[in-house]
Image (cartoon, rainbow, N blue to C red; front, top):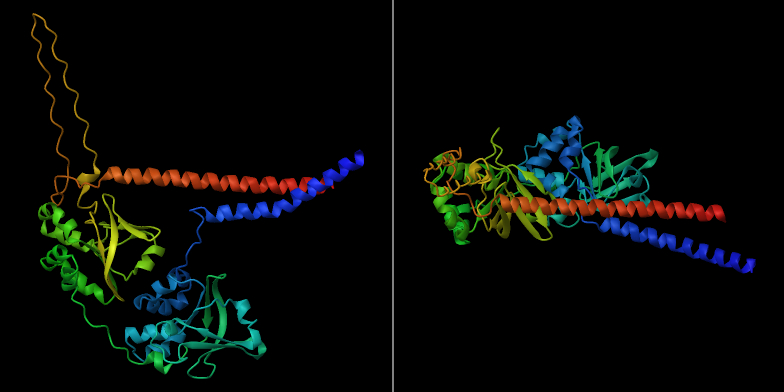
Length: 438
């Protein structure tokens, strides 16, 4: 009898032990699938900002808008060159468009950390670059050849030159297998990448808006100095969030109550001084400055996305992106279903209305007459002259509801993660107890 019990006990322990790996996998999947369990993205500008000797390379990644494209990609390697190594390239006085092609040749569409560079199969590898991905590189001119040289060195050369033009110096930043930022000794020459690139044709943004359902906003732009602000920012990068005609037409009475400077600020509030495609907006949620941002006047809003839907949220209203009029870097124009209302102009909408004063009780029937107390009407809110008297329909109530929902979701995520971690510890301790008994 004792033998049967021991045998049964061993079988049960074996069954529990065999189930533990599967349970651990399930717990891991639950944690990874939680809404809050996302992988942090990278920011090449922030990475290189830690190394002042790469400030020139970093600067041109920004003004060519290549930094935004790098941040939007996964599994990538940036071959950076220090300030001294950039001097030969700068002496050629390339246009910003040609400069972007050259820098694109230094962004490999694969992950190469320091260890992988010294373990290349057969000692050589051909890596595609972002220049190749643009479609403007002919043949294999958008590829870079990586060679494991003698003496522990690793060489780099553009495929169209057929030679080694630079060598690996050191690793600056590695996040396997997301992004690797390495230093190479010099820029990779490429006649095709450096070739003059025609500038994109000028776009009449107000004509484009008028022809695609945003005529009211376009006419307001043309009548304001905000138009010049838009034009001055197109070449450097501009993202516009244009309210459709129905939305702006309903807002016109409030718009007309604004001062001239208030109208300009509101119109500039609908533009962002960088190029942000739809995919970039989806990967860069958070606060964003606008053309109206100036010192103490923040004039910012929050970009949020839920699946394929992207919303623009101010302190007063939440608008949804419903279409794209044009997306030709450095310009992108989106259509939205509501007018964006900055708190700097519409403070009255943020202030809750004062509670009504209690009415005086009716006097009881008595031979003595009693006087009714007169209550002063509540004072008018101290809103600026630019603010319309009435608040917009989508007010603070919606914002508070969104905030409460977000708090509930965060609480759920925290609880789920806590349960998963506790379960993992329980199973681990169970394994230890079983092993001790055996």
